[in-house]
Length: 299
Ligand SMILES: Nc1ncnc2c1ncn2[C@@H]1O[C@H](COP(=O)(O)OP(=O)(O)OP(=O)(O)O)[C@@H](O)[C@H]1O
Image 1 (cartoon, helix red, strand yellow):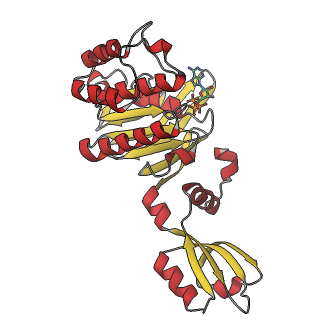
Image 2: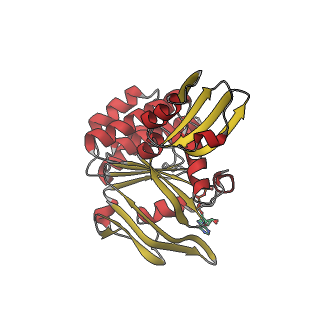
Image 3: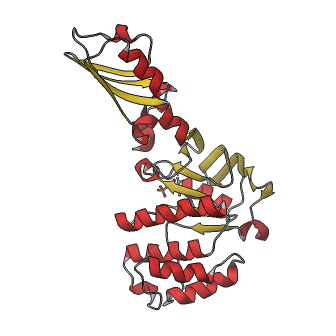
């Protein structure tokens, strides 16, 4: 379990984090979204034990992270700016990390070098930007950390490689019970990958939700009635949005799918169908419901 309580970090007079509080259970994938400068990288650096909090605390299984070698050995931090030794090949970097991480798996490293289209014996500085990121991801995955911190990890990866990385991350969580934290300014990137997503804004977690709960709780419905119906006719539903054009109605309702469908079917529609909401649509409506303007926070 990762716990941040009132976590605060200043850079001169800039408060990068201002009393951030969150709990991230072990064995889950947590997406941290926020606009540029929201404090995502600062949070990851505090968790990785690189920075000392100015106020508050951050701990892994009760142990504070700052300059704590026992905790650091369990964490791999893949920063947004990649770092490799000058002129190093993948194999040389692999040797370095194998000495650093007790959990390093040479077997896994060999597999990854086959799975990903990469030349482990070539100098990394001759790789394209996307290939360099692949190299960093292979090294991170081969270290088999308990906690993997990924800062804008998918930047520059093509869709096939993104899919591959997502699959491996999900397997790592399921098989090894690893905890993965992915910071991104792009909510769409986190869809179908994360168990929980937190929105970081103004140095705090503004909004944090379990993805399954979010997706199960909202439905987009298209239906038609003759004669046409008005919003008031749907008073039995918890409506978040309602639009009608002639006999055709598009609405978003909160609740269980069967219950929503049952109520609409009882009204005798010409047809009714439900369409799943994207994660982004759910966030827009959920955040508006608690008084935040999503477009000011994530775009
Ligand atoms: N080393 C530093 N020195 C001074 N200010 C910093 C430093 N690191 C971060 N900041 C400031 O702290 C705030 C949060 O920055 P941070 O890099 O954590 O944001 P971020 O959410 O990761 O942004 P991005 O999506 O652009 O990477 C910003 O205002 C930034 O300018």
